[in-house]
Image 1 (cartoon, one colour):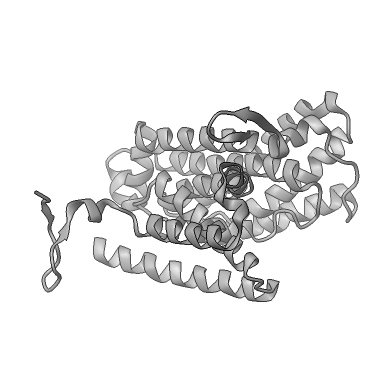
Image 2 (tube, one colour):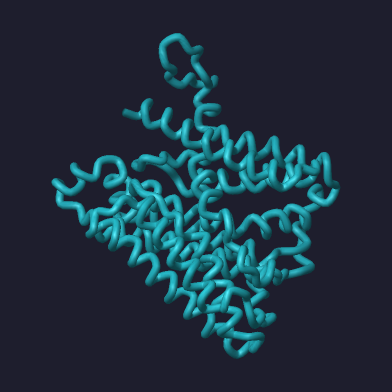
Length: 329
């Protein structure tokens, strides 16, 4: 017998199982069905693996952005950080496989610095995160342009591009397994463990829900906020490495990813004003958003209309988040 979940007055009772299913997951399934009906490529395991491979940068970025959103902030600097990582890695390695790990180490060091700056400005100078990270966006983008002289030079070696394009072949059942999908699984698992299985994650939710009460209770509000921005920046570096490996060097490689990550996280159930959200929901939201972009591309939507749809999704996600916040409070 199916138990009935509690419902608000005036609404019919719903099965408890249906209540647990995320609406975003249902939308994702519907989008995947539509994609598979249009393109036979996605009906194969290799096609679905290729879809996950291309979606990896957005999903990884969204999981990192979720920490900042749940703690009650925004991080608009991740797109420019992706660009800096790709351009900087190409200039450091310059096609030399021996310098790949040096380029990756420098990229993560840059991400750590950017995350510490964002978190420090927000936590200690009390600058609103949307303003602080907008300033960082401009500074990082300017640094990338100055470093490259306005145009990218050098190129990424093959072992660097392996993170974005490498594939393990002849596997039973799935046929191929992209290296990017392995990176995706590791990042989701690590972020989920941090947010849902550690004291740090509980502090993130507590501070996002009520920072004043958390501070009065003795919670380390400033270090936790700084750590959230560091996680977001490091996830941007990881996304940049995979994206650069897949698509190559470009001055626009990270453009738009910051707003896409925020929209994807909110679509997946993360509340914009903080205090609620999950890594699983953020990952599903990112996959849903990427599936929508893929479907629009398959049906021949021009680029301006796709940008307009992205804006509408962001507005709708913000409205949905505000409604969730009102229900919760």
